[in-house]
Amino acid sequence: MYRELPVDFSFTASEQSALVKRLEGIRISPYKSYSAFRHELRMLVANDPNVVRLRDFMEGRRRSSAYEKPFVFLENCPIDSVLPEFGNDNPVAEKHDKKKTFVAEAFLQLYAEVAGEHPISYLNVNDGDVFQDIFPKESLKATQSQKALGPINFHKDLANHYVRPDLVNILGLRSSEENEIYTTFVSNHDLLNTLSPSTQATLRESWFYTPYDDLTVMTGNVQLGKAPDHAVPTREVDFRFFENRTEGQNDAARAAVMDLKAALHANKRRVLMRPGDFVSISNNLSLHGKEIGCIRNEAAQRLRWSIKTVNVHSIAPHLPHVVPGSDYLVNG
Ligand SMILES: [Fe+2]
Figure 1 (tube, rainbow, N blue to C red):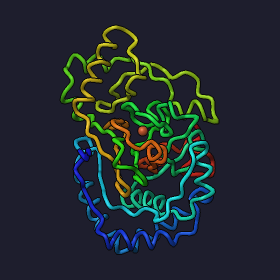
Figure 2 (figure 1 turned 60 degrees about the vertical axis):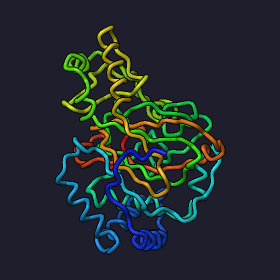
Figure 3 (figure 1 turned 90 degrees about the horizontal axis):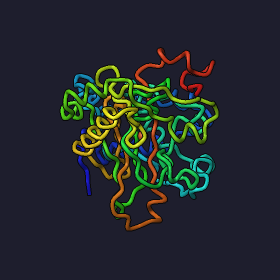
Figure 4 (figure 1 turned 120 degrees about the vertical axis):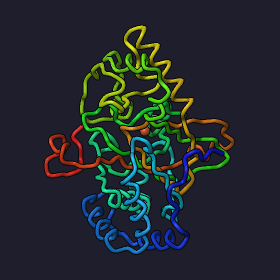
């Protein structure tokens, strides 16, 4: 069983159980009143003694380079003691109906507050929920989206959206060690150390095309048109790439895509996310995906569940794209 990212921080059993108890007391639904939910977590983070060690760890983390280390891996994080079971036809609606505690959501918000991050949501993705499920959905099971049942190629989230998240934070809720389902990670730092200068030069030309992502196009509320051609590394070290979707528009560009694919798989790290495992991914400094090996329990595969947020460092530069009156809901 792979666990190839180093664990950066573990909650102790007593911190974990105290936080579960405290967060289970939250009665405000983040799906009905996100701003009030966020406010409650801001108050809690300022006072709760079980957050002190995490805050000290994150202080230290701020002094290290996110380019060299774009992943933060925490374990034994608080999650709900009761996790309702959903079918695969309309799992988000079932969650809204059946999930009565919000410990996992509260932890994602808590982490964002401690890390100085700002969760955002999109009108086109899960109808604007900040907390999104990685959970298989029948109608989207064959897609390259968070609702897929199968593998997901290397990508960054919302790569060609005008509001790109800086961070993708994922908390494991339910998984089975019988199933080889791995979340995969690769840092742009490792890719750039591996790719030849000539491949890198080709990748920097605007010779690549990536269609908009499945979830936005198939379930969205706003029409986006066709995505423009682009370079792969933008802003020096930021890769705009979706494995098997990003296409070179000429022979040199197609060869560079093959080199990049080989580099992804040579440098990847795989983790079987257990309940309470949390990874914060620097979305502009790395790529991630999902890989599937042997499945021994198909029923468990259909119930595998993680919850996530996408966060930005600051909402200020994105305010022109935010729904008026909101400070987190992106109009797109
Ligand atoms: Fe993703």
